[in-house]
Amino acid sequence: MFINKILPSLKTSVILFIILTLFMSCIFYFKRDVSFDIFSEAGILSIINVAKHNINNEGIKYGIRLMFETGHVQNPGVHIKDTYRIYEDASLYGSMIPYNSQIGLHGWLFYIFTKYIYKNSLSILRIICCLLLSLILTLICYELYKKYGILLSLSFYIVSISSSWLRNFSTNLYFVIFTYFIPMLLGLLCLNNLKKRARFYLLFFIIILIKSACGYEYLPVIMLSSIMFLLVELINYFFKKDIKQSKLLLKTIFYIGFYSLLGFASAFIIHSYMRGDGNILAGIKSIYHYDALRRTVGIGGVGGETPDGLNISTLNILWIYLNNYTTGRYSLILLVLFLLCILIDKLKNLHYILNKDLYLFIVSFITCISWFILGKQHSFIHTHINYVLWYMGFIQIGTYVILKFIFKICYYNHRDKLLTIGKTFIYELREDIIKKD
Image 1: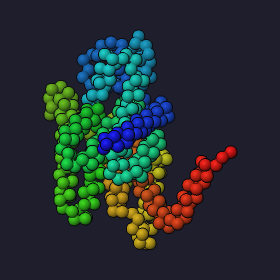
Image 2 (image 1 turned 90 degrees about the horizontal axis):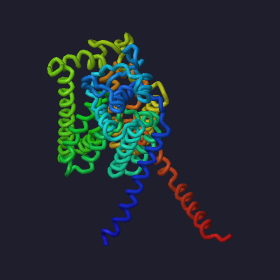
Image 3 (image 1 turned 135 degrees about the horizontal axis):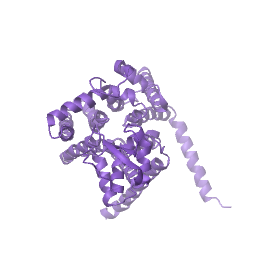
Image 4 (image 1 turned 30 degrees about the vertical axis):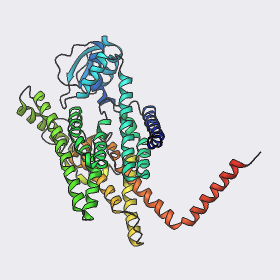
């Protein structure tokens, strides 16, 4: 009897989950900007060309490279048009050079797919990336529903699906953005299954290893997102003086951090070995000097720095990301509204903003701005892509907190009217159903 009661509910949930995933993936795929950051994707398409047309790999170890037509100068930028033309016509191929700032694991995975599964793989691979992102985001919404309820789950889903940044990133083969959200999902799984949390630890090592091997962009945000909700619960229990639960959450956060850092370190050592041609120390020095410094403080490396970027302050960087594009301005509006909500809540002694909502807002904001601070030079140069970081939790959570406050005001101040409207609506609906023509 019990199983018979559970099965219909489970079946309905699975169907709803599939519909939500497919709906999100369709919106992402068909509403994206097809020309979005083709500069980066061309580096991945080059190795796909190698597999598709059986081009000599020339002993290149990295999964990303720049490809050029016959007679063209080997300069970044020239490779974009060349790479896409070569995908259609192999006879145009002239040469290629490696991009050694990362291992490019995803390039090699796409190479295998193209080589052994499907030659004209570009559209198929884009669809797969889009589906995986939609699947992971929908799973995150499900875990949020289990922990925090329907409002946060719906806010996360609706805000994510309406994001032009997530849409444009969803099919880009360079960014493989679905890897950005897997740590957040794993963190929520740990939170919702604290007694079984240990079974997820190794997965943090694996996904951060894979993400680091696919590129180091945004790693601080991605790693912090894995503990974001756990940290909120830790702060909440700490102020409640629940020592037992605080210790449990602190221990969980420690192990997630340990396995995540181990995954990053493993990818970095492999990359250093490749970069140093077998000499790990030489590889570390090369990566630090030519890549790490150049993308963070903007000194010590070559290429990519600008005089303005070297001297700009962290506060000015943050202002850039709060004062430009609709996304930046919306983030700024959320901050202003949040402060206004707190002020109203305190002045009128409403107690509508719960401590957990406060912590969620603050922790998600810190998580998303971590790259703007730590990757200052990268953030200054790459304003055409870095706004996507606001959608690593802050805008979704910020929208939820503001909506929740507004809904509470409407409910507690107009409860009688709302109940009357509800009864009237139900009565009219009933009359429409039973009335005869």
